Length: 106
Ligand code: SF4
Ligand code: F3S
Image (tube, rainbow, N blue to C red; front, top):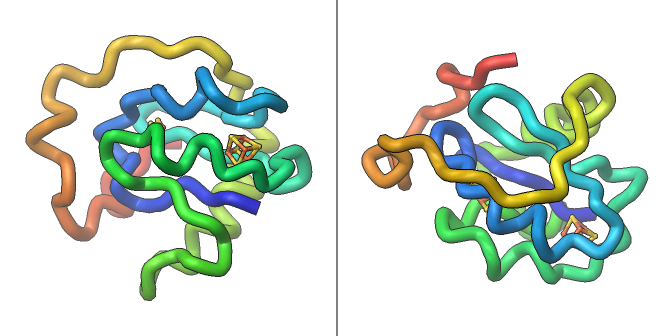
């Protein structure tokens, strides 16, 4: 499965949702997640993310293992998203900022 990692938090560009053939992205207040049971591992979303926040589960950067569980958990409670929307106005300022997990809103 593919996993949305930390750099999506507060960037949330949503380009990823437009290419997913099985519409398995789910949207929270400032982060998106992938439902691991629905993802078919097509890899199409990974290069679409302007924040390079999407990884194959096996290639998650060190320290981001917690995002595997977060994607599984939050995709059960957040609504589906299939159409791109505007990024937050300050998305560029947050790109690459370390330690964004503390800002995750549920
Ligand atoms: Fe969707 Fe493919 Fe990305 Fe999985 S890898 S979330 S199926 S676009
Ligand atoms: Fe997040 Fe990148 Fe999608 S910032 S919303 S994973 S395009």
